[in-house]
Amino acid sequence: MQIYVCVKHVPDSAANITILDKSRIDENVTFLLNPYDEHAITEAVRIRDTFQESEVIAVCIGKDDAEKTIRSALAMGADRGLLVSSNDDHDSIETARVLKAAIERTGEPALIFTGKESIDAEGMQTMFRLGALFDFPVATNVIKIDVDETRAVIDSELSGGNVNTYELSLPCVVGAGRGLNTPKYPTFPDIVKSRKKTVKKFIFADLNIEPSKASMSIVELEPLKQARSPKEITGDASIVAQKILTILKEEAKVI
Amino acid sequence: MENIGIIIETDNGKIKETNFGMITLARDNKAETETELFAFVMDADVKVLKEDLESFGITKIVDISLAKEQQNNPVVRAKALINVIKEFNINTLFGLSTAMGKDLLPRIAAMLDAPLVMDCINVDLEQNFAKTSQYSGKTIATIKLSGDVLLFGIRPNTVAPVNIQIKTQTLAEMLKFDGEEFVSSSLRVVKSGETDKNININLAEADVIIAGGRGIQNRENFVILSQCAEKLNAAVGASRVAVDSGWVPYSMQVGQTGEKVSPKVYIACGISGSIQHFAGMKTSGIVIAINIDENAAIMSNCDYYVKADALNIILELTKLFNNG
Ligand SMILES: Cc1cc2nc3c(=O)[nH]c(=O)nc-3n(C[C@H](O)[C@H](O)[C@H](O)COP(=O)(O)OP(=O)(O)OC[C@H]3O[C@@H](n4cnc5c(N)ncnc54)[C@H](O)[C@@H]3O)c2cc1C
Image 1 (cartoon, chains in turn yellow, red):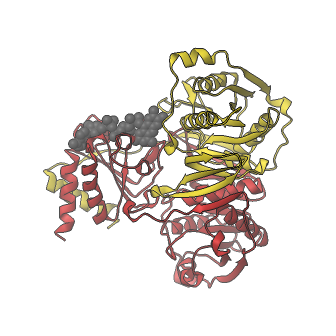
Image 2: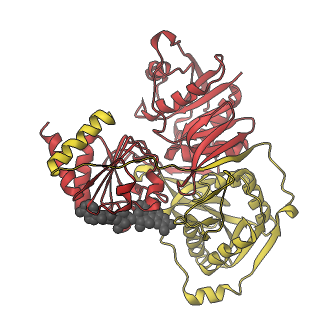
């Protein structure tokens, strides 16, 4: 069975983000595999190892530099990669179409993983759009998955630690949440071995993506201003507690 | 003519408080007076909710009935809502960016091939703009949506609820939508999460959050935070270090890879204020930091700071309540 993992090349969360032309970021920072995608890869590899004749394929759309992120996925155990090379930014409506086109030209998916969100755009929707285009069932923020030949039983986490358990028929799309597993980071031999793995390149324009009437486009990007000016609360513990209570009551009016 | 639909989230038959901020945002945005504000209710007795909804300016209430065994199925809910959108010519749909919303709004958007921005902190319907955070909360993006139906997931608590004046209130029209026929064959609900009473209040929707980090040191000390939180009607959050150390479950993590929260007050106890932690709580109202190290990043990026042992302060705060 073929398991696809959609991976995204994103700026390191610790990087300082500089905004250019009020609409894009200075990309001269470290880019990495989106953290949630690490969980997706780790799980896909685990599932692959329990099925005969199965493979994990990492798919990414991005600039040529995004091959690094595919290489990270390969080092973590994916078997091969697909890179749709494009210099433009795509909203999730278009991204889902591109991912589908690349997957369809490669084979027949039984399972498609994504991360539950990417830490750059924070859109939380690509997995659903991909599912709708393929007409596959979808679950997101998945923290547990059991797969057999025809179905996947998954736990999808709600806030407050509650989970919904869904049964999805295969093929299906799964958005990996952080509770799914502990990512298995590669050893040096894994990295060496992965260098021999292949990454097939597609050119965006060759995929003949049919556009949607709908779109989302960034018109402005601005730094989140931190206008806080800290004031110290002093005194012994009981006085400080009193002062905090006053803030809660009079300033925040929450009690 | 514009019709705005708002998905109302209820809890045990009552409207969750955070809906009122979302309705206020929709109401403030309606350009023409003939714009209708629809409330879509799926899980509660609409008669009980009617007055509250009217007092925030809802003009039509749609009672959506689903077959009992399908009620928890997000695909069925999405299908029913899509039909409601069509039947009532809805051009704009609002829902909360809660756990439920994150499993529902993108399904609707995907099935309609319509644009959606989740976790909006503001919306401008004149220009069809949404504001949301990007890059781990380091930037605010203004996104333009184009399409026949526009969807907005509103971050809970980002807009203060404001009633409308009694004299301008109108009676809402009560409508019914029968969605009993909708089914889902490819996604079946095996078990639906009950609200776990131990996890107290929902993090994303709480007015006050007391969060603990490495400085809280162990599981037992987190119980002390919980006791204080209970008195304050607050939720307890945590840094990733506290979660990774096994002191509290992952569902309590605030930050870039945890919950994104905007409470009115965020009390950070023994948390240094890493970039990734800030990504989840930057948009909070008042931030109070309690830390033994005055050079910790959070101390220069908050509204109030206390240089002290966090547990001591929290214990004193609990004491104040115990003494009435
Ligand atoms: C990809 C990625 C994603 C991440 N996502 C998240 C996330 O979602 N959320 C998150 O929180 N982190 C996240 N992190 C981790 C983050 O980088 C920090 O490591 C983490 O937030 C630090 O937690 P902390 O503040 O509890 O611990 P520390 O940074 O160790 O700070 C502990 C603080 O407690 C103070 N202290 C000690 N004792 C006391 C006491 N008795 N009273 C008061 N203060 C005391 C210390 O002075 C110190 O400031 C992520 C990291 C990465 C790489």
